[in-house]
Amino acid sequence: MNVTPNSRDHAFYELLQSLQLTLHAAYQTQVTVNWGETDTVAPFNKLYFITEGAGWIRIDGEDYRPKPGQMLLVPANSRHSFSPIEGRKPFLKNWCHFNVMVGPFDLFQWIHVPLCIDIEDVEGMNRKFTEMIGHFHSKDSFFARLREKQMLLDIVAAFLDLVPISVMQHRSEEMNRLGIIQRFVESRLDCGISVEQMAEAVHLHPNYFISYFKKHFGMPPLKYVNRKRADHAKQLLTTTSLSIKEIADRTGFKETGHFTKFFRKETSFTPTDYRAAFTYTQ
Image 1 (cartoon, one colour):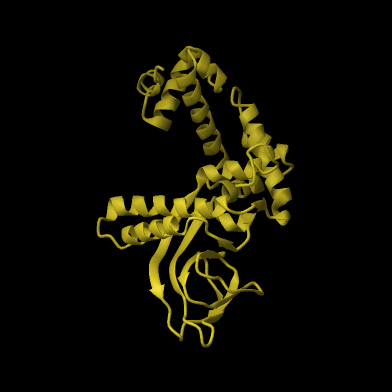
Image 2 (cartoon, helix red, strand yellow):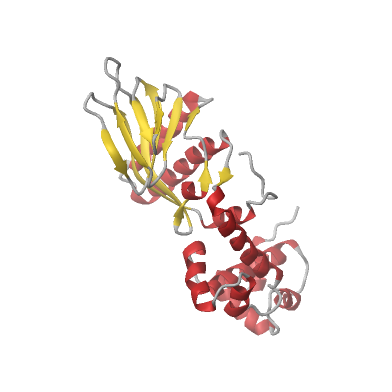
């Protein structure tokens, strides 16, 4: 994946922490000569892994003819048409419909990637799809749902690992604003943080800022601040020998009792119990 956490896309990496996957359908299909639609728009992504045959797909005005061993992504909300090619055997394909959400947006609304790629390990990708399809149709509802998400994430990661990724240019100003918000919170975890201060940091009215924040982060601003405080406390508890009082100070609590109550609410552990349970000696 041709980006790093040190790039200007830092805010995008933070959004990935709230990644949510939903698999809507997964099958292997031998399409017929009647396969086809015109100017379709779907609220989910479509991913086709071609194993045999030929076909034609147009995505937002650009034509593709994926070949066996290639994977084609049809991003959510894109206008697309498709059909078999006359005189050629229609596609045999593994496919799935899915969403990968970061906040309220699908991942592929934030990034730009090539839509048709060559898969290097064809047999390995076939195995991934076969396993995901099997879990999707399994009656073992609890564990199958976990495993289908695991396999979907594995497939999406394998796809992204083969292509250059860039944040959409028209999102750059918004991404910069989100980055300012994140850095502001991270720099003030040891003191008070108000919605008004966060809004002022990005020159937004507080009332608008609350809805703007929830739209992009999937939670209210102060809930996000509490989550970041809890995460910082966890890191300090398991990687340092700081006292509970010192950790309380570094996460914005002047009284240890308030910090303990907060931490238990966020994690179901007291700070002392969390340290004992999750600190490992080398």
